[in-house]
Amino acid sequence: MSADLAARIRASVREIPDFPQPGINFKDITPVLANHTLFAEIIHALAEPYRTADITKVVAIESRGFIFGAPVAMLLACGFVPIRKPGKLPHTTQRIEYALEYGTDILEAHVDSLAVDDRVLIIDDVLATGGTAGAAADLVRLLGGNPVGAAFVIELGFLAGREKLVKLPVTSLLCY
Ligand code: AMP
Image (cartoon, rainbow, N blue to C red; front, side):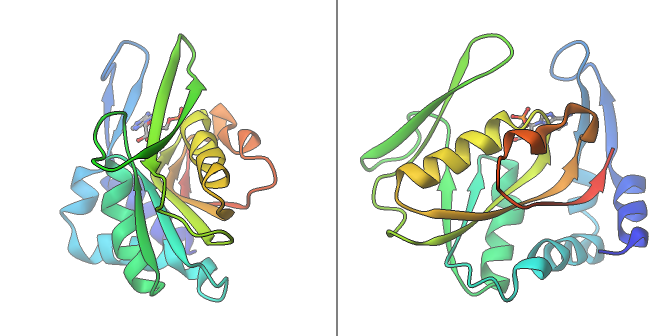
């Protein structure tokens, strides 16, 4: 991953203070998506470390994870599996409940979305505290899959989210 790409992503991300709640400095990636060359470079850079990793499924987290996960799955020539908020998936689901700073949240995936020993790359736009991606990795394991990596466009390094992704290689294109 080039420092130049990180600089161009940083220049394109729009920071929205106090959204969706006070104290959160929201990284708005919509200007990045609107720039087709930058968007394409990001997709290639997310996929690059995993080209020879025999990934069989990309699993992405609702909803911005889908934007990056689906094209990465196409590049890696593997299947795509959505992880969604509760009540969105139509078939029987496996769910996982995980702790937030205050309270808990739930993620779901279809029970038959992964085969035993599927080699899974987890994708999301932002790694913050790592709670969401950690829960996604646990959900993959519950479904019989083998998480082999997690890739993010942006990492909020000061929140140490990668420490929650124990034993899972983490890549990010831009770290704050
Ligand atoms: P976390 O579970 O704390 O790692 O949060 C990760 C999820 O929340 C990801 O799906 C992100 O899209 C979203 N998120 C967390 N913090 C931010 C932020 N500062 N800007 C944009 N999205 C964020």
